[in-house]
Image 1: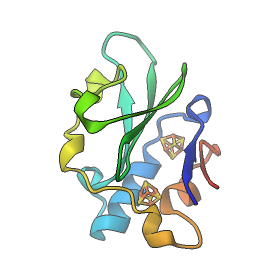
Image 2: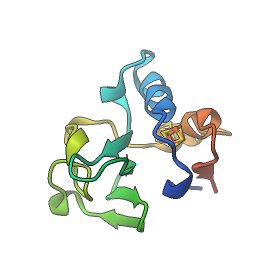
Image 3: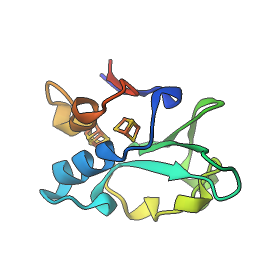
Length: 116
Ligand code: SF4
Ligand code: SF4
């Protein structure tokens, strides 16, 4: 099972961050979220998604989706400098403990996140 991201469907509502933070911390704290909506300072209306996974960081941008090793990652990474949140202190996505469905998927209003 895995979490798949479709960045072109994302509208940056941040509901997934809230839902994931709640899963990890029983509180609406985005710093406790494994999934991050990142935005660019350089480009207007440019944003994407990052997911901190056990082995890498999944980065979904309008240009496509790629996985980067934590060592390759600096700050917002992948053009997300405007939201350079400290991803290294975030909890790792554990696929909601292999639950029947994932919190982030359940709240995403656009189908940008899919369990597969
Ligand atoms: S699958 Fe669960 S742990 Fe992983 S990013 Fe989504 S809500 Fe967070
Ligand atoms: S909930 Fe869906 S649309 Fe909203 S920020 Fe997350 S991935 Fe994007």
